Picture (spheres, rainbow, N blue to C red):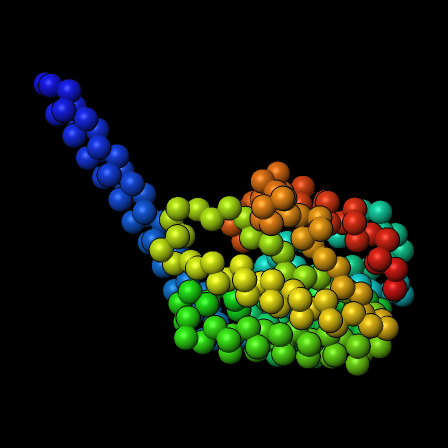
Length: 244
């Protein structure tokens, strides 16, 4: 077997393995979103995710609220004499988070609400590029309304900027666009305008991003999510703010 034949066989093998890997990824992603789509159809706002939202406690309550990034956020250990309740739901858009606010948050009568939401709206832009401006505008409007509803409960509000993205994996490239990162910046600029009395804007990029503007690899779990070390860094930065 000559050298050219060996190279051709090797190249073919690599191509086949790459194709097989991509097919597995696409199947897993397809299955994941098929299940999510059907679950959302049965309970569009996720109201049944937290069926018992009224919790009796004599301590002040802080609620972490939003999508999977909020759901995965374990509270700072150094926060004492405060009850911290998580009401994040993975995969939710700002419209869903807004829609379930009364049942999942207002009923808790919290002293403080920490909000992290928005990426699930904006990651749809590559699929619906003609709706980009509307997606960004709706995302901003919904976040503004979530903040206002939070204020209406009498709580202090900490609204975090949308976490930066991680390193784009090859398998996602066919379904992604640089417009998402641009949109995240646009929405984050809007979030920063929400700061006022009883509303604190917490800039997550100041903690998580490296010099390239993406999540520092030591904090990255995957493209869209951070790991426990990333949350630890956030907690170190935000602990002093979490005083109802």
